[in-house]
Image (cartoon, rainbow, N blue to C red; front, side):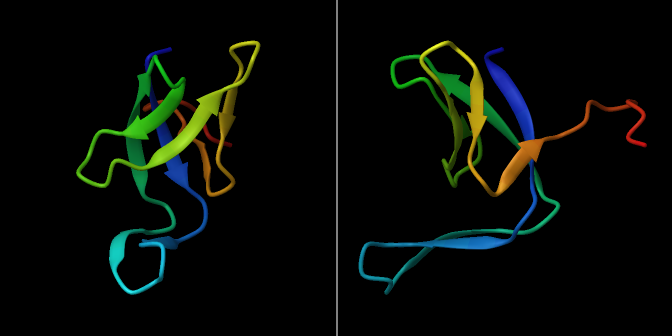
Amino acid sequence: MKQIKVRCIESFQVFNHDGTQLFCEVNEGEVLTAQLHEESEEYCTLDARDLCVGHLDFYGKLILDDCFELAPKEGADTE
C-alpha cells in the first residue's frame, strides 16, 4: 500500500516552533491522499501542506495519527 486516502476527524492547525506562523490548517471531514516515503516509512500528503498522517510500525502495520482515519473507498457501503 504505497498510497492511502485519509479523512480528518478533528480540525487542527500547524504552527512553527514558537507559534507565530501558521503553516497549514486541516478541516474536519477533509479527505487527503498520502504517499508512503519508503526511507522513513511515513505517509505524507501529496498537497503543498506535506503533512505526515501516519507511519508503518516495526511489523509493517499502518498507524495513523490521532486526527485521521482511513477514508472509505468510493462506492463502498459506509453503513
